[in-house]
Picture 1 (tube, rainbow, N blue to C red):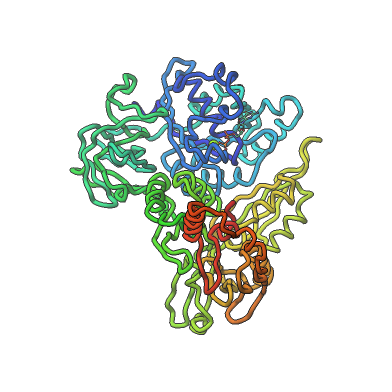
Picture 2 (cartoon, rainbow, N blue to C red; picture 1 turned 90 degrees about the horizontal axis):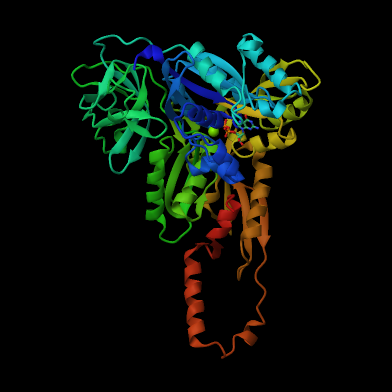
Length: 631
Ligand code: GDP
Ligand code: MG
């Protein structure tokens, strides 16, 4: 397919502004998927949310696009030309920014969507930043036009967006992905304004960028590639610049949105994936470990240096993960293996806890990423899983110049080791918050309480009509550790949902961190240990001791629960011993048949497997599950 008839673009937007819906509508209008308006009318609300590009269950449940996916469509332009449009659906949350980069890399342009009723939000700014860094042509569109009709909010959003993009107001497309209004103009806009990939050069050597992959037990690894230079066809021999391994190309094609082998598609006459095209290849790669995101393939006979790529993914939040079910470890291991094949950004290593036994230490891009993965894991594993308290990577710098990064609170230096430590560093983020001006005070207070340092404070817009209040953009530096639990939800509730928040990575900075242990009758529960800023210790210590008291059942003895930093006790709670059960004698008479007794005993045995003992105290795993935030 000649590059001048190809457009590679991504749709970028704040979450829920309508990327997936618009992508679906574009696929429908171009006849790539069957038109569904009639079908939509017959569907109930739940079914309507099923979108072709959001295939994963959690995405549908949470409305989050986790994996960037690609779909190609053939568009019959009114002028009679047939264009090949390669659309990359992108995730809409900062935790998934590495995925965003993956989809921007093969693109020449981006369609920036803004919800007409909400206007520009925090992620609108951060995704635009990302697109500009990559020198992409950005086309602005205001979506959900059906919601605002003539009430002025739509025009206010157009004004805001044209100011942000520094373009004329009439260059902003007005769209309703829901009704289909203006979607044709989006297709035309993409063709007219987004530049085609560079022209094909005869005899150019192949370089193809692998930007995503999935596993198929039948064919092995299926890699999504953007052909940046040259061309690739069935039977070619290619080599990975990352591993040096060579493979024959067994099959290849485009995603539209399902796989279409090029051999079957009459439109792609060349039978090759050529420069500028995005597609899938199957190359007898059996081991998932050999599929590297950002890898460059070249023809084995024509070696080439790798293309500029994205940085390898970094885990920024870690947590332990343990089965609740006795003997559940192998099954959990299996479930984690399967899931990490589809989400390569999760890292996993075996670990063991003296309290919980065998488990895994998992690493995530952020806390939302962790929540999404946890939910997916529980679905996949079909059992409850204990996930320990999240920790950001903490850098310990020793006086002798050595350094280590810890990802488990239990590895935090104890008071003795602390004497050798020069400084402790923690990751920070650069947070962007967009909100109506009236919430400025509340947001500043929230950021200050989370150890934030203000970086900038600007107006996004001045009131242009009765429908748009002045809105501000606040930029703060915040320790990552202070925002991973409830910052986002508190921000939302403080501002009645009007504030939006997004962040990018900042530098590591000094932090006065310490380890808080939870003790039960003086024995440490390693699974509950955490690393905290010293200023949070008092409150957290009291909270955790109280929460634990509520779930630890009464025992024969008194149980004392303590939160401690080093040898100083922060909080103390007590569970009184059981009263002697005087009724036991009455009910425990000889009228229980032997069979019933046996059943009761078996049940007791099963229960015991789901308990752990610390010293003389027995704690059901379920209570730990509850205090750690499971249901
Ligand atoms: P994404 O997070 O950007 O992928 O957003 P989605 O495509 O999942 O859309 C978020 C919500 O907005 C869904 O409930 C859509 O049905 C709804 N939505 C999307 N486009 C429109 C539109 O043009 N009009 C209206 N009224 N709702 C829309
Ligand atoms: Mg989506």
